[in-house]
Amino acid sequence: MKKLTPAELGGLLPLVWDVFLEYEGVQYPENGKRAFWNAIHDPAYLSALCAYGAFDGGEPLGVIAARGGGRHVALFFVKGACHGRGIGRRLWNALLEDSAADAVTVHSSRFAVPVYEKLGFVRLGPECETDGIRYVPMRYARQAGQADAL
Image (cartoon, rainbow, N blue to C red; front, side, top):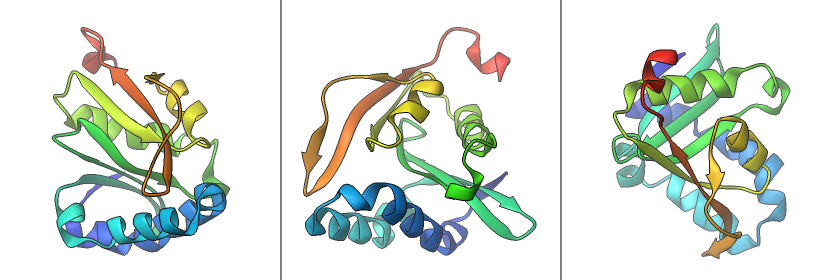
């Protein structure tokens, strides 16, 4: 687990794109795929993120990134072969530990809703779509004393 520089986050974009296409992009219209591609290749968007990566040796296994001082998860991707190994939980804990936010939001893909629910997020409403990007709005509320329990 490692906090990433903007350049290191940029180096993990192929992982983000590949996992996106495998698990989310299959359900997206072309304009949604294009909107996601454009977002992850926008230097201003990427520079506003605080990110962490999981590695095995030098091989990237996953990434989580948030904006707004950790208030909104913008990217959260773990290689499919690594699902169920606790990598996502460790990435989430690293982000949460470094954030002073009382609550964290996310626009979850359909695929990731159960993952976020395991992490303590709750749905805020039905699935939405913006520019072809489909998501379920979710929120995590930190409980008093919870930071000490991580």
